[in-house]
Image 1 (cartoon, one colour):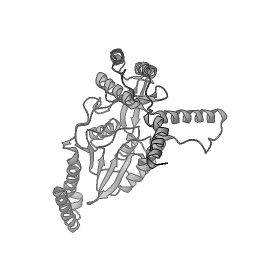
Image 2 (spheres, one colour; image 1 turned 90 degrees about the horizontal axis):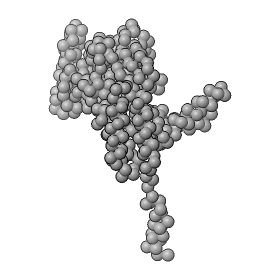
Image 3 (cartoon, helix red, strand yellow; image 1 turned 30 degrees about the horizontal axis):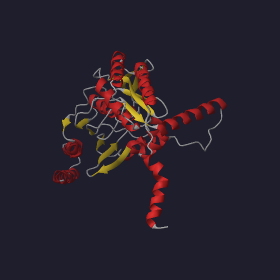
Image 4 (cartoon, one colour; image 1 turned 180 degrees about the vertical axis):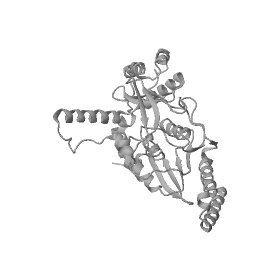
Length: 365
């Protein structure tokens, strides 16, 4: 058989697989939209806005806006954009995540079987994808290092569940414990879960302090969250702290920066953040789609409000690209002016020379 005939035969065999693309059905789109309305009505933090959002989605659906959409991810993306535009709440997200939904359901099923039978789970159970993804990104800690001048640097991209991330938090804080200043980079942090108050506890003394108050509409529950009396490492006290924020710093990242700012624990450097203050919940709609619903609002004990729609406003405003150099330079300036270091006499003079050399390198980049 000639080479050309072999290629033609192969294409003939593969043709159905190459041309077939599964499309989201009209029936599934209808059911997803109806489910969205139910979940918003029963979970959205602002009860008075739920009806407006649902009526608007109904109108868009009736107009035929979603009729021509065939791709699952495209459908999720359009719904997300519409929910955000209607509500002005950037926390709304529709996701096409069939594998994650399947994993979550199987995990719940295994847990139920274990509870009913009072037996240990099988070691051959399928992977928990939530935990698997978290591990693959080192629970949000992209980089932890000590910069020239003995300044700590932590790049944190997500706040994972405390029971997962606590050992990594403790290890990171132990690594930077002996630095003279610290930079925490949240410029690419998309938010997450309630590990923020534990990280924040490293910057408070042992006395428990009210971190914030939250109201969860889905549970009709008001909760006070405090700093932890015990952390598994040395607390980072009475040292300069700089937090980098930007347009991608979202939700829980904003909350951490907001609390640290208004407790006078850190200097915030960068751009004003998006202003997404609401806590969220991920709810399944069917086998393919999930919705991220804002279910919780926050009240800070100092400001008596939160950052929703306003964002965290930096002490020092600068571009994302320059914020690191600005914070690094400010840290060096603070250490140069330190009376504590000046008391070391000749040692301080050596440090002063070193800091100035580092600042020169930064300015020349």
